[in-house]
Length: 223
Image (cartoon, rainbow, N blue to C red; front, side, top):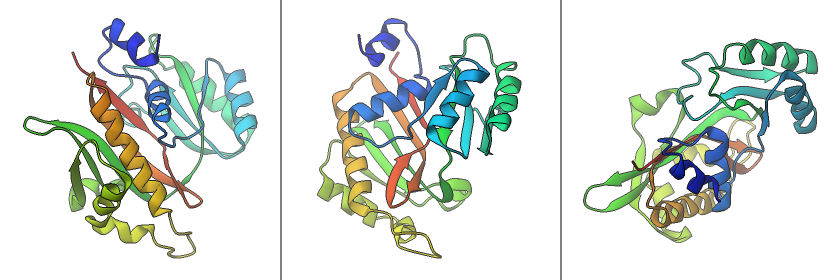
């Protein structure tokens, strides 16, 4: 049984971040190579495997706003830091949570968002635009009806001013526009093929070198 089928059978309204990223990866959408840890020892082992620095995040289907719940720690640079932080966070997790996600720490200087919403007339629609702290203020977002191909995704990227941040700037490498277009096209195909998926929020999308990667994801299910 797939992760999506299992969540639907359990009548879960949301996937956990770990589950959401596994679903995205099934559609060829690049996501961070997270590890799920149940205890501090597992968190340290995961961090050693991924390489420092790392991020720790609470993980579970009910943990929709991890930052507000003070369940995100970034830029952890040693095994001792990870062990102490993991123990502190695990002690505060709700008992229905799955554990902690251990994720690589990526460059946060350029943030993008992509998502899926349901339009009453057109059905699933994909949004793309500027992420980060100015998302709500500037509202630099464009939309396309799903599904669409890479060439249409390139047009979608061109429709937002945030595309200029994908250029090589201030010592940061150019972000691969074709790779971002493939990400958006694949997201549109997920939206069009999975009627049980009501919303998807990929926020933020960060750069790993030149490649765009979904660093956090939320998936809402129908019913």
